[in-house]
Amino acid sequence: MIGIVGVGNIGSIIAKRLVESGLYKADEIFLANRSQQKLIPFVEKGYRLATPAEISRFCDVIFLCVKPQDSEEMFSQLGKLNALIVSTMTAVTIERIILKTNCEKVVRIMPNVPAMIGRGVVGVSRSSHVGEDDWKRCCKLLSALGTIVEVDEKHLAAVTALSGSAPAFIFVIIEALIDAGIRVGLSYETSRLMVLETLRGSSELLLRLGDHPGEFRHVVTSPAGTTIEGIYRMEREGIRGALMKTIQETYLKAIQLQKELSQ
Image 1 (cartoon, rainbow, N blue to C red):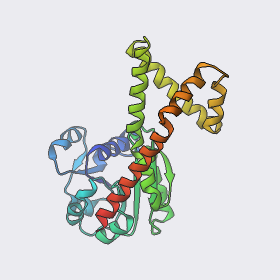
Image 2: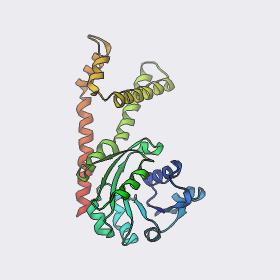
Image 3: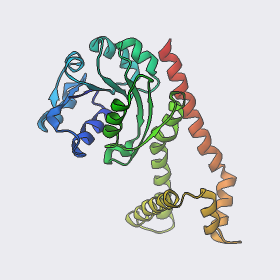
């Protein structure tokens, strides 16, 4: 049985994707959440409700999806565990989870919002006590969310900034590009379609061919043409530096949160 403690944004995505991918049936997944109101749609679809204590007794894989600041209350409700633990909690370390649960099989993950349609990126770190069988099972579950990228735990804050938070930054960029299209005379619908398809095609081109982005940028850029004029403007406005600083400051915030929670 699968247990999910905390059915907010990420917990909801995991619960839905495990069923949508065909890996589990709804009645094989136990859900626990502070607000019972959020669980009503899941009950209607056949998911099973439980307390954290019941999940700790009945489930052999437990997803911990509460907010980091609520982790202490959750740990007290769960008690000691004997399961494979998969945590989405930002900044709550594997060491701390082991200390609080007395369970050494711990995997920390950082999925992003495109996991909602199975196209996310899932940064993953595991404790040394997660054996190959448990690891294979974990990867099978996480494959429902998207592409799995294993990293050392010390890099999870960077994963949080680059792929975890980045969809929000990308949505801002997309919105700006759509508005730019509207400004030069295109309809919202046309501008939106062209921006999204251009982004998708550009990403797939890089994924398929594996080249550095700069190589394709030069393919598009003609001498004294329109593209180089736009790039020159982007450099003058500091777009590259602004994006790098955005990721850096998000990363530093994740580090700060980890230090606060460890005190």
